[in-house]
Length: 87
Image (cartoon, rainbow, N blue to C red):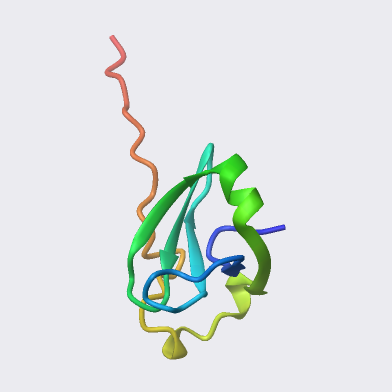
């Protein structure tokens, strides 16, 4: 369906008028970034599935030089796991 880094189309455009989004986080909530203005929105997965229309470009096929606000997988923040000191 959709993966991290994909450029997707939603049913309604963002307030800036652009309807191209990048998936930048996946989990119980989906975090997407508007490729028109760079605004980041976090949406619950159930609501996201209702608003999602289709994948425009898969993550491995994105031409980053054409996308001003696109973040590659290397630029995305990795999860911050807390390590316990083992005694």
